[in-house]
Amino acid sequence: MIRYDPQTRRAPATIGFNAVPMIDVIFMLTIFFMLVSRFSSAEQVRMELPKPEVSQAKTVKMPERVIINCRPGEPTIDGQRTVLYSLGPNRPEPLSVISARLAAMKEESPNVKVIVRADRRLQYADVRAMMSVVAQNNIEMLNVVAHVGEGEQ
Image (tube, rainbow, N blue to C red; front, side, top):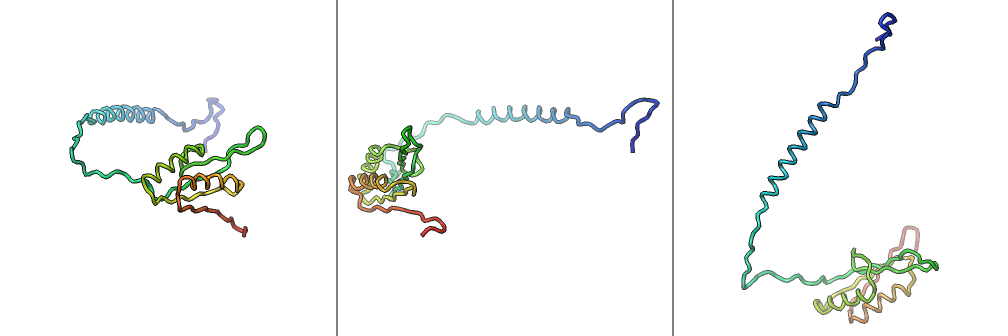
């Protein structure tokens, strides 16, 4: 136990944190990573890739199944909710753009199937608008997905 010495009038010595070695280590790591990053950029050499006359690469086919998400957007000034439509996880797009994409998919893959996922807060008319777009593009297979939460029947 350390006690106060009245003759020297000093407080007892305490153990402190010495940051100098940590600063030295950080400085050395910074120099190391700066040198290594220069070497890795020097390894990237420009290359001329061959262009074969007869390629065996296959073109990517359009997916056989497309998922369209319908969800409510932010409410407008007059209190009406907008509806956001998107192909898969992509950003929302207008119905006309989705219709054009579905037409291109139908042309590429005639047996394309569409799954419409709708948020339960939407009205049926909003989902019906998407179903009409699918029908206008002559897509014969349409599934509508509804989720029933726990305790709802």
